[in-house]
Length: 120
Image 1 (cartoon, one colour):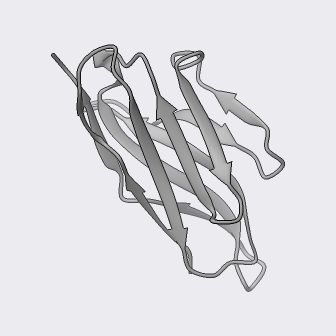
Image 2 (cartoon, helix red, strand yellow):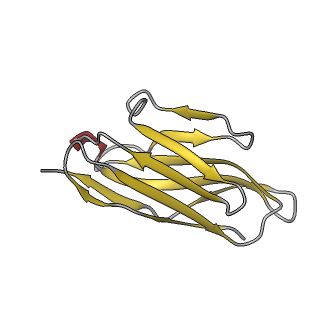
């Protein structure tokens, strides 16, 4: 079973930067797409950035040019570099992975989330 653990959240001033890390552990046949989502208070969870198994990346319009997703396929980690942060980026950020487990099942795995607060 694969587990995801996010780290790197915290309090940052507007215009600042944070680097979120998603570390995976456990055994799977493959980890395909990895993505970052966020959920602000009172709002639905939304996709922030995604990285497919072949390295293609995509971003929500509201983070394009400010956030960068990257992956280390050897360590099975995903990084979200967040620059030029705005107060509206305040949310709990969740790591998501689509995996194929040892029984050839396609599963979706979530981390527990890490809080990012952008405030002066």
